[in-house]
Length: 183
Image (cartoon, rainbow, N blue to C red; front, side):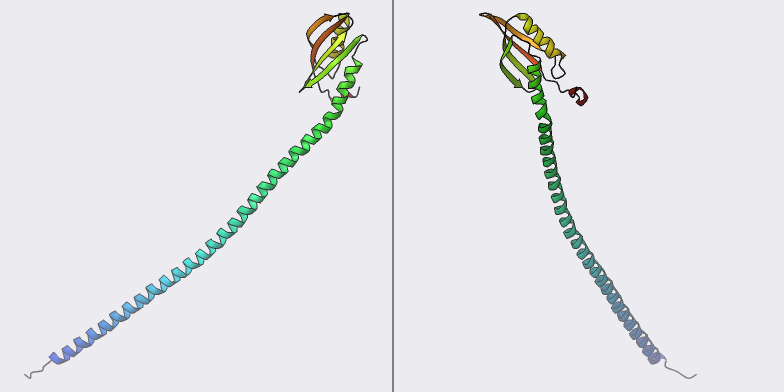
């Protein structure tokens, strides 16, 4: 039998296979590295875009917050103006009531009775006066009680001085309905 030496051929084939394996391994590593870098670059790009969007939204939110504050300030100013307007309207509405109260005080005044002082505190009028007889004071109290502009009077003092009687009484102010006031 002839002797054939297969060793060099096997060694060449093993060397070629090993060389091809290393080339494939290096190629796979390079492709894997490129894939990782590509994905990383893509995610970095997406993160940068999202950061830009977030920054834009933050600046818009700040602008809207400023506008909201302006709106709140305008609402506060509006409320203050409405309060002033209501106060002015209330004063305008009460102006004829005060005149009407004084007019009614003159109407209910019986003959022989005189007012020496009138003082208004909140919704109450304090009357100091002089009367010739006690019946005049009683008559004044009945007239005040019958009036739609006054509540029930309260007599606090009656004293005799010379021929006249001094008296102090207080009466609450009433605000009648519009229909009653016109009568």
